[in-house]
Length: 517
Image (spheres, rainbow, N blue to C red):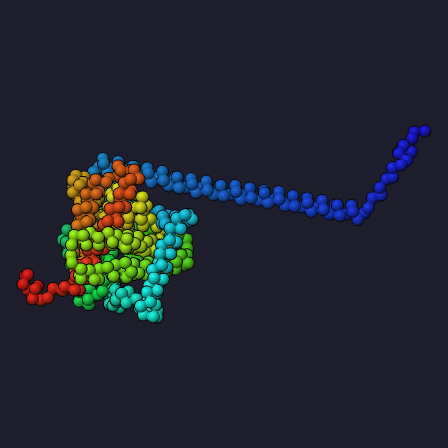
């Protein structure tokens, strides 16, 4: 008889199964299995999301590449056709490509995502806090109480009511008169038998109206109502902006009518709404449409307006703390070359502050706020001018908005008139126009003609532009650019401040004026 398991191992007792423990173990195994299955499903889901994102990115990249290739081919075909057929068929057409707008953010917005660069921004905010604390401390020590009158700020932005109604008149004129005259001329030109006479009459009316409304009227307002500096600055800047906007609109639309009219075709007149949008959007190059963002970030708008207001107070405290105490009583000291040179370098720090804060306030905060409200997608209002190793690159990247207007409508058109010759003369002409506009704004704002900026712009600016060209790539040249910028800002702030107080302490009387005349 074969031994059974019980007889073979008599001393080993078999453990009876426990139903409770078996159920718990099955329940635990079930939970683990559910978790594993859940992880597997989540992984599969994420892999699907990843595949979808990669597919979307691939599609977008293909679209962008196709668009880039198409634009490159079209540009090559247009340039080849222009070379082979000449420019006779397209009068007043620029020989270079037109500006193309893209969907892109401002450089500083991208740099603010970097913590190290954001710290530099925090340092300027801390400097503003130091200015506020020092002003409060001086008031408490001198007056025994807190005195925040902001008298200089109230004075320099005085008579804003006059600024408001004069701006309204400038805006209404720029919106209606150039557009209506162009619409009238554009509708009659293709069918007119006296095209030259029609163009001469309409052009004369437009020239006279532009001269009266955008040249004489703002000067009259500033001088007749004795606007203070900042208010005059607003009027003069808006005067130049409206002139450049209206010129861009006419410059972009008239050649199309001339080209189609020579073939007997009617040209559709751009909608008034597109011109109205152009008058507010932050660009000086007219297009019937621009790339747009999908929605408005109102927090971003409020942030930029708050930063702009902070910049105004930063400049105010800079002038009150670092400039006025020095130059206000300078007439009481005997004049000497040493005093003049020391005042130049003393004004270097506040001059640099004014340069950087003005750039950030106007070209970043103000323009980005309006771009966001209007959903204007191309935010390339400036480039990385702070990395410039030449003044030619600095001039191109400091203010891209104005540079584009000067390049496409002045430089290229003059070059076309000169048949691509005398490039140096054309470049000097652009410099002269830009320097004259800058000096005009300062003259109208300050109330006196003292061409410091004009001389620095036309003489030293041109020399530095030739000497420090784009071939200079060493970091040493970037140091040189910054050094000359610091010194130039100190010279301007010093000389303009001295002349401001000279006008106050030593005014020209009527007897002296008649004597010199």
